[in-house]
Image (cartoon, rainbow, N blue to C red):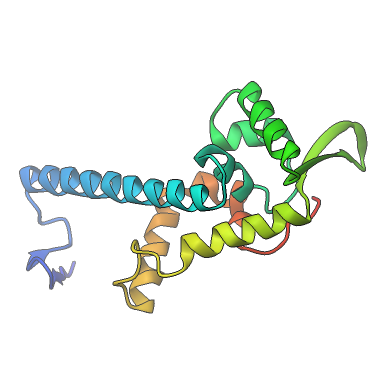
Length: 173
């Protein structure tokens, strides 16, 4: 089995790392990932504020790239459905979200963005991805490699949120 060398650290990359060094690297990776998450969260707070949204409202709007039920949003956002109800009510009052009957089951209400909501979501997405400090220093090939690794770390969100990273309009499911 051939071993390669990481040019940044000059360390072997094929399992030849001692358990102590592996723990040290894992600790550094966790620290850096949490710091990155904190930076991205702060960016979301700032972007939300420029649009007059709370961070929670901004997150909810981002996940409405397609129509969803409040139960689906509660699962995605890992919170109680009653929290979603409060967020949706406030966004409805602002004219950004509407509840519509599901065509296949009139008892089910789906949340969709209004025209203003679609515009708001597009502005939010634009602020979040334009010159993102999270990836600004990466070459396109490095961004692709990072995305591949992040996808591997987060397989559970692939299908649930696939359409949510675009800035296009929300469409009924």
